[in-house]
Image (cartoon, rainbow, N blue to C red; front, top):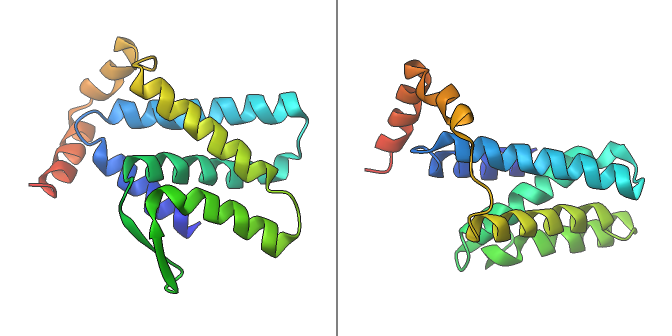
Length: 147
């Protein structure tokens, strides 16, 4: 849960000017994970773990090259963090990290689609945010942290 909180909040803060992009990222991740788990007939008890792997992958690709402290023991490059968690699952749980790899694969699909500008929020979705001045003021305050 710590990793989801840490990485998701950072991604949300990065989207302070366009919060609908953050919502699209979550919606894409949840939808594709539910679809993939259903199609592959995987155990649904791991959905939160899949989503956390997805978020960590997106975060890691956003911060490629940055050093990340892992469990206060050692540092690795951010882009290796999702793979570290997959290896950790394999070593600690003695099972193939299929759910980790599914989250990584779908995270990669999202990053690719975002780079190709295939995922854009529809205007009606943007209007949900823009028509709510209190919500946009909260995001404006988040943006002030970067100045």
